Image (cartoon, rainbow, N blue to C red; front, side, top):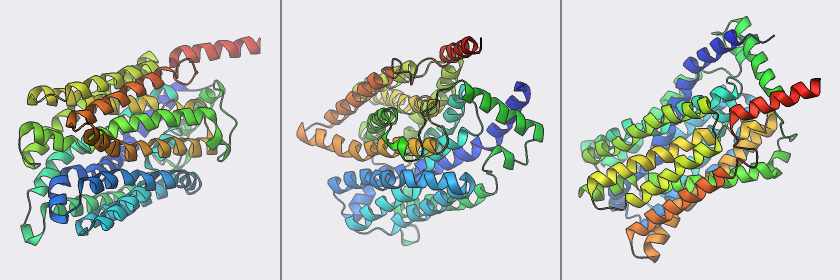
Length: 443
């Protein structure tokens, strides 16, 4: 008999112990991944890197990321999350700090590839790691808390990046050099601290009683008994049609998402008519505050209502509308529209990431989730180049925004289609139906 009270207490403790570590990792990850957008103007001016090379560098990060994503998650499955997540943080932090030494386009591109390789595996590792600690009905909320790392990176990172950029000339270094060095080394230091706080599985958690460990494992086993997992291993998961459809969704969502992130500070600066610095940094934090609120509320609403594909689709559909409105030259309206874009681009993703765990488990989940994220992140490579192509082809900066809006609308359609496919259907109704089928079979 499952003791749900003890299981819920175990999940509460896991939320308090593990989720803050995951959030902090993602804050540092996203800050070091996207701070290149803040450095864009001064960095290009000092190094002579062209717009085309910058767009290539912004996107090429995801090629290294995609190439090493699956191997990284398989290694994590074997050596444990504690060691592997720490390794990811320390290596990417040191590489991120290395951007302070960049002087040529070649150095810039090489470091962007290496940064992607170093970070590969973080998101799918966390998605997979959470399946050890939380039932599906709580997982969207937990993933929502994890994804708070994205807006928090911008809420706190935007002003900090702006302040560091304003240190231009201090001790003979450029502002962008201070930004890369400080934020990169901080990530490496946090990685060392995180190592002492993580544990691989419930059995290793000294902060859980034996009764809580047993109850948590029982409730996860009970949930698994109502699911129809795909019988796939680490390699066969890579050819599963459902996995590839999830890859397609992730790919298009990441185009819509990264088409905003890399150019957001510059767009704010253009609206305000000033260079990227402290003021732009503080104004840029506003949409991410809205995003943080959405990340807490919307995944919880998804858990409460059971809605997955439908809700995620409508959320990113609103992002598409925001993209179109953000093409305005009215600062207040443009910033408001970008609040919706930032919030909706990110808030749909923790809801989406509950879906792979519905049909993947074990080593198949480790490799399948990694493949979804790796191919999805290729959208991050396509996004800046697609946006530059649209703006160049149509000789208009708004063309890039309209193109990203189209990607958001396409993402919504693909998410809605997960419902008839049985991937994104209502969780509560699905659980009730599965239990009824089990009762019938038992009788």
